[in-house]
Length: 396
Image (tube, rainbow, N blue to C red; front, side, top):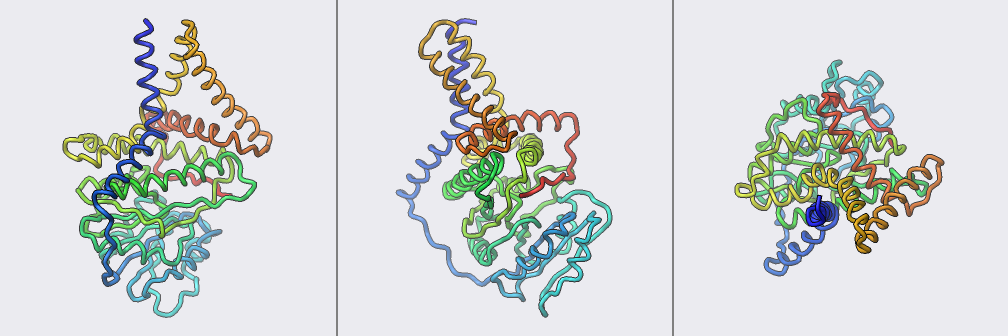
């Protein structure tokens, strides 16, 4: 292979990787600044609070469920305007019993839905949706704590008829002794939250996280029960219909970090498999001539990270070696930088195995872990080994 071809492959791969992880953030920041200059943001009008349904799906959450119920009931929202559904399908611990026996304040509108069979979160969620009679639904995970103002902050976005869904902010609670997986997860979600904020300001959030999101009941549609990342798929289908998915950083769900790197990897592999499944099922969204800005955001923020960027990482290293062997000092320098980066990731792995917390190695280690999970998720998906039944990652 001649040098010109090698250089073309190298710089194409470099652009894809850089753009997927950092470049899009830079472009997004510039576009948002331009939009602010051309069209100043308008404040949301005050409108009557709609009736809402608040759905919590819990599977074997006996350690968390009472705290979650108390947290849900503490929402700063008129009690007569909110109904709670606690769905405990498949739970074989005390989760159902604890929901049933909780001391609810008089006047609380709540329902317990339970069936012995476990069919996955989306099946449980859709059982609750069959009984929803409010214009807005808020969904939140059982192992997260939501701020009191969350519901109020979320529903104000629905005063805009163009908004079909609202994503809350996911925050990771970390101790000072956080390991590489926990610290990397926290840094990753801080960056993701910033991108989501800018995505919404430019046009639309590219998929909400299941920890906290809301949607108009009228735009909801049945989600295939074998969908792995149902929250992402559901909100992207709403965006595909022409609605915007807004972002509300003042409505947030706090979740503990993963208990270990192994637990974080388990979670990442599942999300990777689900992301690849979603890319296949949302293939029409790749048509930029039909979906315009949404396609640009979707490909830039999600598709490249889940497909081409991980594929190009080993290619970049291999091609860089070939170019360096041809005697170019420039490519030798780039190869040294790549070797140093992966060495830092390896050091992070080794230090983690020895329970040594050296934060300088957290980011390269987590970056490699995240990209490795894409390969593992792909293998699991094509082999049909990724069940819709989530094997929960243990939390710190």
